[in-house]
Length: 81
Image 1 (spheres, rainbow, N blue to C red):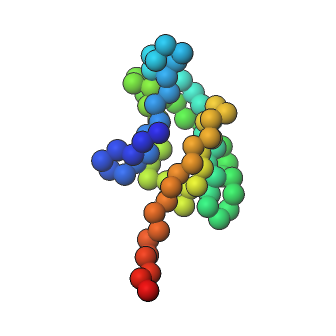
Image 2: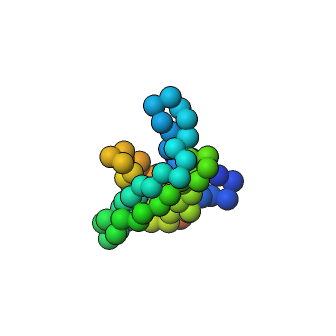
């Protein structure tokens, strides 16, 4: 998983030999920072095997096909002493 230049999170789904999983349906489970799990979302990869998940504000974890991804959210405010 990586962030693109727009700040959107992108996941590439690849097969055993590294080939992209084109038009592959997956359930995406988002874990909200405060509310816990959000209803699973059914998504489909594009022709390059990519899922564009957007900016994911206040999301701490993503689970796709038994793989868990942790998102490091930078604090919006930094207090200096």
